[in-house]
Length: 222
Figure (cartoon, rainbow, N blue to C red):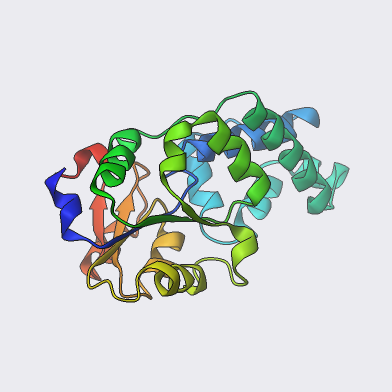
């Protein structure tokens, strides 16, 4: 991994990038629907097209898919509370694993003693559960979780805070995201923005044209 020595700071999103939690979120929503008698048959890619843009799109798409669900429970906060309970139960069951190439990359960064951090929308509670189950994540010493900043992505605040803490003197900073929404937060900083995803987002060609780099997985970076 000679390429890592080009950079002085590495910033990582978490869900769907370092760990497979996006798949777990999807399963938690499927369980939520099933509790009310509805079978969410979307593919994972279809789920991502709803979940990774704005806060209301997934809610609206699920209600559109199941109008009867909205009649049964029009208060989305109650449904989302069910989903959150499902998510915690799945996390505690050990369902989370590292994404391809992540362990090798994290160990290489540790060996090279290069500054690195996680910048995530996930709360401390969920992050702590996952870290206990995946020791390689503890090679990252700095974690900016949802409690660490005010404005969610695509606002750049979280990444700007990370650069302020760890990269004031760094000339070359690189950041990794797995969704267009997160990538847009990175693109508002001086970091080189990299999208790592196997989901065929329609925006990928335009994001690359605007200066982002794209790889389907960490194992594709050479």
